[in-house]
Image (cartoon, rainbow, N blue to C red; front, side):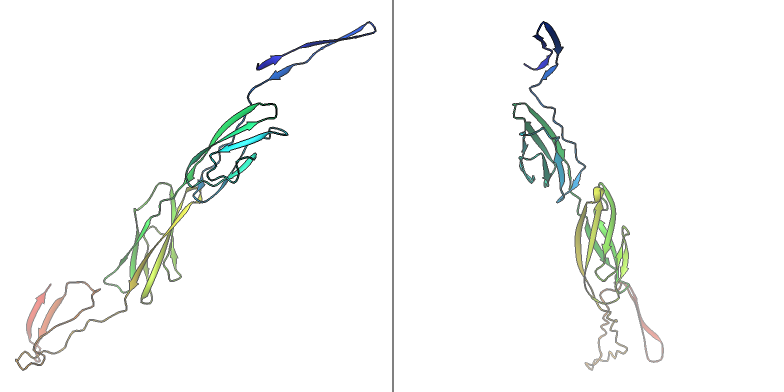
Length: 239
């Protein structure tokens, strides 16, 4: 039965007598503790361990999910999500002890990058994220795909050449956890508006109609004025 015992012992030889007392602690359960590890990022690892219970002691960890082993004093835990682990320690004398610990896994929110191409300035793009922020977010790193970067929350960037670009957004959270997302878009070359400089609406089938064509990236509104060869305004439209 568990408890503390103090048996007395006597020893007599040749008429001499000696007496001593020794205290024996009997316990049916070991005191086992596992330190709580710091939170980890998804895909990272942490070490779980218990004190050495002496020669011949056995260790049993559960669940086995994410563990490097289940029968050693120290194990490496790489859970995909927050997990509570239990370890049972047993000595050769039959004493046992159990402890639990939780490995908290932080899964960062992957913010979605958005690119708004300016219709009035060739190559100008304004970037933003959806959502605008997330719990635990510390900083952002933008890679514009042309060798340039920014740490602004909503940066603007002008591309020097037309082409297809992929911008990468790295969202950095507590504990150094991060998530990468990308967005791909097309920067078109400059195309000047094609506006005829002459019209002869006389019904002869040549230059009877006026069809100005504009760059689709320019503003939708425009003012139109038509003058005759003597400089007199003959038509005007605003819109």
